[in-house]
Length: 454
Image: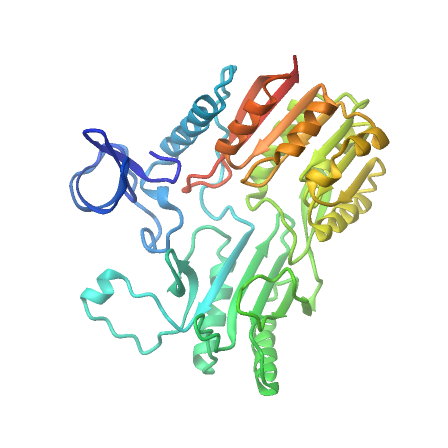
């Protein structure tokens, strides 16, 4: 299996990537795209199924583009993810590694996500089977997921297995209400139509947030929109936070838009070891809450805190890791690029009566300077959880200058993590590696690495 979740076939020296099949399948392939050293193909006929195969449980498997690994038993999925981490660290990092710990699998492999976003569109995606059978739909409006490679088309989702089933019930109820009352769905090319997106957030505390996003250009549309929101509020007493956003732009980003409260509170809470984390409509929080807890426990354990350490938490987000380790540290300093996230981090510290955490907003390479270290002190431990692109060279240079005793590097991309570890290798030894699977049925994996000063 390749990192992208595709299976690999070889013909002579040509590597061929094939989606929706598993190692051991015997198939006829049709080449769809060919480069010098590799090709992409699809299986047009399966002669023999692999013994390492599972029956996909989702009716939308193979079309919506998500959960590509449903055809593999979960025990096999995590073996390939472990190998993906090992291959990246060895091939790209080229550094001496200790024995890598067995990957921590997710206890839940269905209904494990705490956040999903759905898209409305007036262009329903028709599957190859529907086209062959010349299926005609009276209703071509759809709400579901974008089809990969077709930004304006949406696959109508009946049941998604990623989030608690309340998510399916709310989405389908809004869809049916919109059909019945003839609401317009957005045309993503012409930017005409009212219903755009909806976001559902659940939490371990039982709270439920729903955000409905619409394009409103006329006064009567606002009245229709409010009627829809009232229907949702009346139909689902489980919703503790019902919010809406007016988005008249040409893109779906909401970070620059105002959020309006229709019913309940403007936030929900997540809980972890008695700590409460406020999650707003724009907040980032790991989307698998139970595995996030396991991930943070590994990071805290690797940090080896005794209560006397100064900890820098880089790319702190809403301060979840910083606040989580604060009880075991003398002081924690969190740095994050997004100012709103830092405000959330400060609120989370206040809610939990945490007095030994400071938070700063700014670009990491501009904030984490020698002057900053001179002012706040040389860290004993640095915890870093950068985006997929990894750490900027300037950040690595300042880490090397700071010389913390330990670095705990949390990553959602072992390839860029391996690159960064090679850059840190001049002063640090890798002492422990722990992969953690956050997203069953996808190829993504989180990885935690402990580095100690030579």
